[in-house]
Length: 163
Image (cartoon, rainbow, N blue to C red; front, top):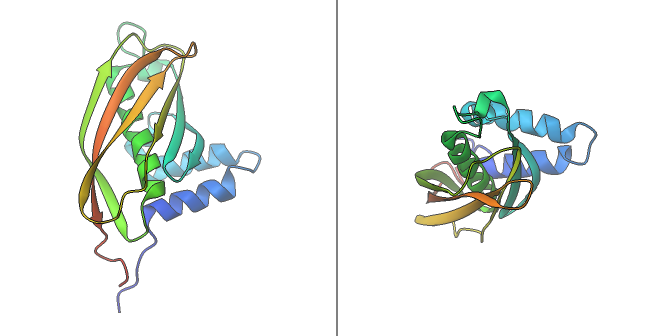
């Protein structure tokens, strides 16, 4: 008999609930996310708040994510949109479902500099096969929206759910 693996959303929710209240726990949680998704981990973003259907993530400008104009690179901002919408969606998914990004678009409204904050709030997807589009706004320290992104996620039942 095949053994059902724990869903990524449950792993993320449990890790956040256990680690975030502890001294150094958020740092450790962010390293865990980086291990789970190495490319996203290379961004160096930090999860500040996470609950089912909601994610707030910050990214501090540093040389590794800058472009030639000394602002945060467009692709780093796109990665932040994908990470923010993904964590909000994954934590809201039923354990019997999975999701993958199938489209990503970002409008760059002004140069992104300093400490940036991205937020996404969403309703829990049904877990049946469907596509959901989620939005994340990225704001600078003054509260100005510097980029607005949408990610379309394909939700499907997990093949190993209930196995």
